[in-house]
Length: 478
Image (cartoon, helix red, strand yellow):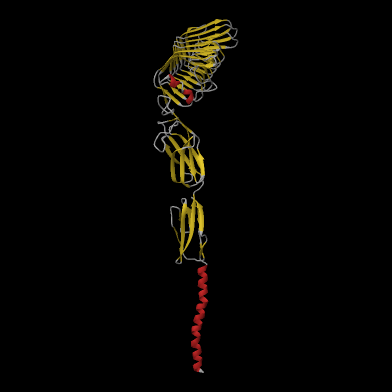
């Protein structure tokens, strides 16, 4: 009995071991089957992220990307799209590797703040100018294509950015040449930015042929004017900068002048101390006749001399400017004749409006006359017919200011300003003839015929029925 008991005890041990193995094996198999990657494939756009996760284990996961230029992955499984393409993200844990195929698509981004303009702010002149292209994308995108296209839609120049980050400004300078190296012809061009499937197009930029002696019309590089033909091109480029580089003799050519109170000159004309001479300015279809019919608030005319100019009008006439809202400075008008068969005449300026400034100008050896046969108020002033703005440090000498009336009306005649409602300061008239003839009610003053503004530090010498102010309803400081 003892021997049989011992045999039983020894036979139980292997059986217990076998049972234990059978019990443990399913647990290991189940644990292994629970480890998995949450995604087998993933689609991202450039710049976007998504997190991959391994479940079923607490062991450390080692992450890697087969192509970091397309997609990257962090130690925590955060995948980021870098550029369009495909890559495989791998997760290695417990000696086993799990994979996720990542497809990165380009972001469909719009171009914000897209600008296409000349580098110096002037006109794009073929063969001379350069243009700056700048833009920002609404989203980060790769393989961004920037194209400069003609009005027919033909791409003349193209630039590709491998990657553009959202919110960052990208720019380049275009020299006006095609990708082939030849110059783009005159015409209208636009810039388009394509990011993904989105295309944004800029406003147009016009390339023009050079019609002046040089320049682009910018402040730093003004258009150079050296002939009358070039001078007469100014209305086509209103708002730009001009500089006269030679004296211009008009050869008694008849022109109508340009601009008006309804179409004001808004650029800057620098006479550069040069002269425009021997012109006849005449156009019976226009009410305002002068070399510059109207100058806007931003308009400037400076350092220009007019000599031997004849102006003939039927209503309002002047030699340099008819209606001024801008700035006229250091200009000279000499040996000129201004005639009106209508109502208003001034040699330098017919009407200086509120906000307008005339300073440092000189008039000498001129004749201004009005021969009126219509009803209505008539005014003739040496420097200006009417002043509502500022006239400072101006002089007029050896001129004749005449009105011949063939109607019953009110007539205002003066050596400096016929009707002053603004400020007239430190200005004077010498050697003047202020003459009147005919019926009507006359207001004559060497300085002003009628003052309803401020007159200070002004003087008059010559022949006039009144050397000072005809009617003073304002402030007169002698």
